[in-house]
Length: 194
Image (cartoon, rainbow, N blue to C red):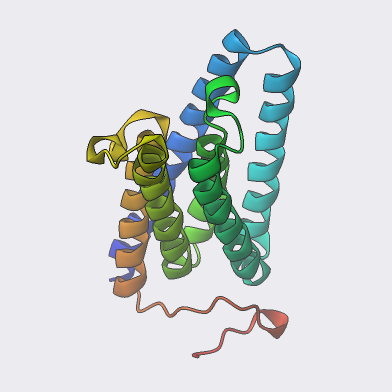
């Protein structure tokens, strides 16, 4: 069973990292065409720093990474809902800022999934579901009435499918590996069965 769980973990990580990097490159190129040089440069640097720092934390300090990434995931989810409802980032002029933020979050969650599949899978499920609902339903409700066809349309839809696929793969890997869920850090890296 451990081989199956390992294959599922690495498959999820591969899909998520590929989508995150390709999506970020596409977004940076798109922003460079439509914006002044300063905004895409700062945005790309912020993306690399955020994804890199959280990814490093996920690989090196897994026990600290779980509560940290949970807090970041919840914060991104809350801001995504607020942005969908109130257009915080001026989607028409700045582009899909929340989609790029979710892409940055995919990197550390993919890396966390290599060691803590269930926790990473649950966080991916949260961010994927919130992105799905906020990009489709909440935006269309703000525009008038719900349009179910917008759920997977646009840049947000491109992020939702891999996030939910990665969540499913990691949750199955955690189940196959008899993983347990613990979102709190423990002293000296000792994991408890609570």
